[in-house]
Image (tube, rainbow, N blue to C red; front, side):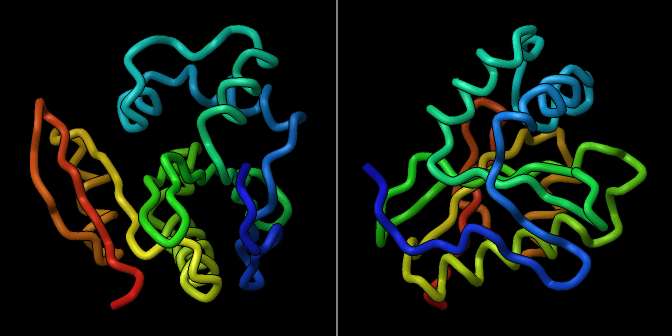
Length: 164
C-alpha cells in the first residue's frame, strides 16, 4: 500500500492538477483513440473500448494519477508508475489537444508535480521512456532538464534527479 504525503490538488493559477476520477475514464478513452496520441504515449494497440476496463488499468498501473486542467477544462493527464518511495518513479504526461501543446501547460503541470514530490521527499529520481522518433517529446523532456540514460529498441531512457 502507498502511504506518502502528496498533495491531492496542485495549481499555479492557470494550471491545476487534481486526482483522476472515475468519470475521467470516458474522456481518457476517447483521447487515447487518436493515432498520434497512441504513438506519443508508447501504446501500439487501440485503447480499451470499455471505459471501466480502462479505469481499472489506470488505477492498477499508476500509483499517482492526475488530470491536468486549464481554466477548469480537462486538457491532459500525468501519472507516476513503478514508484519506489525515496527512490525513483517513471512518469507519463500527455496534453491531448494538439492546439494546446507548445503553450507551456505540460511544463507547468510537470513543475507542479515535481516540486511537490521534491518538497515531500517522495522520490529522488524521475524516469521517462520516449520513442526515439518522437522528436517533440524528446525535446520537451530535455527542456525540463531530463538527461539521456541510454537507448534500447528504439526507446530513449531519460532521467532527472530531484535532489540536485
